[in-house]
Amino acid sequence: MNSAPEEQSRILIIDDSATSIRLLSAILKDLGRIWFATSGEAGIALAREHRPHVILLDVEMPLMSGYEVCRVLKETSETRDASIIFITGQSGMESEIRALEAGAVDFITKPVNQPVAKARVCTQLNVQRQAEALVRLAKRDGLTGLFNRRYFNEMIELEFSRHQRQGHVLGLALIDIDHFKAFNDGYGHLEGDTCLSMVAQTIALATQRPSEIVARYGGEEFVAILPHTTLEEASKYGAWLCEKIYDLKIPHQFSSCASVVTISVGVAALVPSENSTIRQLINAADHALYRAKAAGRNRVIA
Ligand code: GH3
Ligand code: MG
Ligand code: MG
Ligand code: MG
Ligand code: MG
Image 1: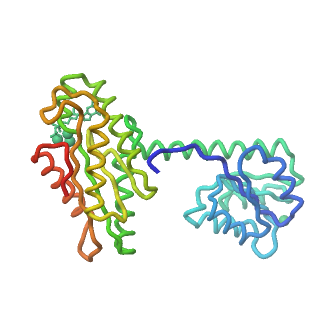
Image 2: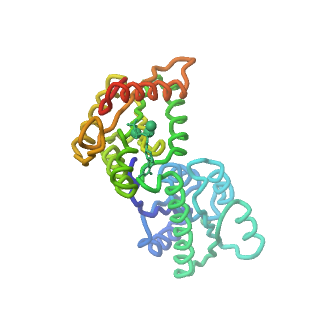
Image 3: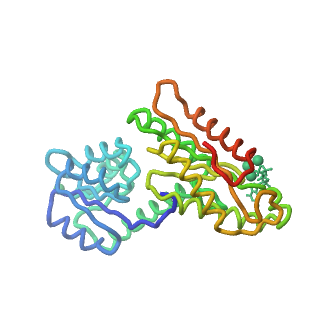
C-alpha cells in the first residue's frame, strides 16, 4: 500500500459465442491477463471483481444486450473507468453512434480483423496505463515518494467513517524530524532532502499492514493512519519508529538532543463515539507531538 508496484494489464471479454471468445483470447493473449464471460450478468460480476482495464463487449447477446451491460458498467463505481470496446456484427453509422453514446470508447466489427483488433485493444491499454500513472502521481509526494497530504485527507475521511460504522479503534501518529532546520543550515538543503527521503523510506518500510497509510504531512512532518490500533499499540509503533530512525545513524552534529538524526512522535487513538471528529484525533496527536518535543525530543508521547 505504501509503495506502488506496476500492475499487469487486465482484459475482460463478454460474448455469448464461445467461438468468438476463443478467437479473441488467442489474438489478445500476449497483452495481459484475460477473463471471459458468456453473459452480461456474469461479465458485470467479473468486471466488479477484477476491475479490467479493457472490456470487449458483444452487442448481440440474449437476456442483456451489450448496450445494457455497458450502461450498468458505467453506472458502477468499480467498473466506470474501464475502456469498453464493442464487438458487433452490425456495421454502419447508427450502431457506431449508439455504442459511443452508451459509453464505449471504440468499436470492432465482426468478422474480426486480428491485427486491427489487437491494435485497438493496445491503444486502450496505453490510455489506461497513462491514466493510472496520473492517478499515482496525483497521490504521491515528489521528493519522498510517500502519499501526499491531499491523499491523506481523502483516506482519513474514509478510515474515519469506516471506524464510525464498524466500531473499531482508529490510531494516528504524527512524526516530526528533530532539529531539522539546524540540519539544513549545517549540511545544506540537498543533504537535507536526502535525509528527508531516507527517513520517509524507513517509516514507510516500518509501516507494513496493508490498511496502514503513511503520508508526508508537511515539510519534515509525516503522518501514519493506523486503523484497528489502540493508543497503547500506537505508542509501541511510535517507539519502534524512533528506534529505527536512530539506528540509521545519520550524523547530525548540530542537534542538541543527539549526535544523529532523530524523530519525535505524537500518537492518539479514537474509540467510536457519536461526537468524535477527525479534527479531535489530529489535534490530540499534534498536542502529543508538541509534548514529545518539549520533553526533550527523540521519543513518543501518547
Ligand atoms: P523541531 O525539532 O522543533 O521540529 O525543530 P525543526 O528545526 O525540525 O523544526 P522547524 O519547523 O523549525 O524547521 C523545519 C525545517 O524543515 C525548516 C525547513 O527548511 C525544513 N524543510 C521543510 N521541508 C523541507 C524539504 O523539502 N527539504 C529540506 N531540505 N528541508 C525542508
Ligand atoms: Mg453475440
Ligand atoms: Mg516545527
Ligand atoms: Mg522538526
Ligand atoms: Mg515540523
